[in-house]
Image (cartoon, rainbow, N blue to C red; front, top):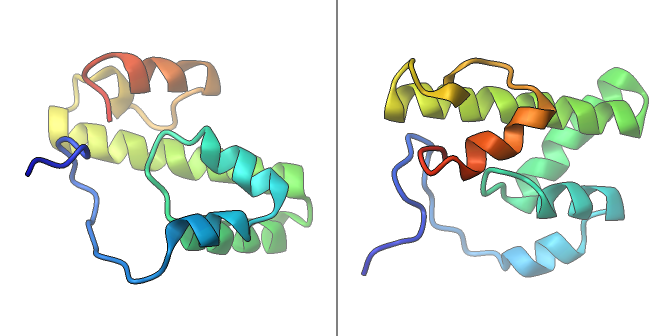
Amino acid sequence: MRSNRGETSLKRRRRNEDPMQEFDRLPAELRAWLANAVLPWRPRSVRSAFAKAVARTQDKASALRELDRLQARLVARDARQVWGTDHPCAEAPIAMADRANCHTSGRGP
């Protein structure tokens, strides 16, 4: 059976925990961010990255912007590895306005 992940260079792992329960336990701002994320983040990964960003920035809004930058770097790295350096999403970091274009271009993740 084919998966819906498509072609990616990102790590794939099987998980034993229930991702929906983990998602439901996230704070509201992280659930909103994750619902609009380009990559298939695990709730635990988002919580960890957010906690580190809050510790650095001391501000939740700044921490969410850090998550956006982190995701942009991951998208750019994956685009370079999968489609090459000529792909429009291969430049890091991509602007927030361009994030949707990279995701919906038909060539992006």
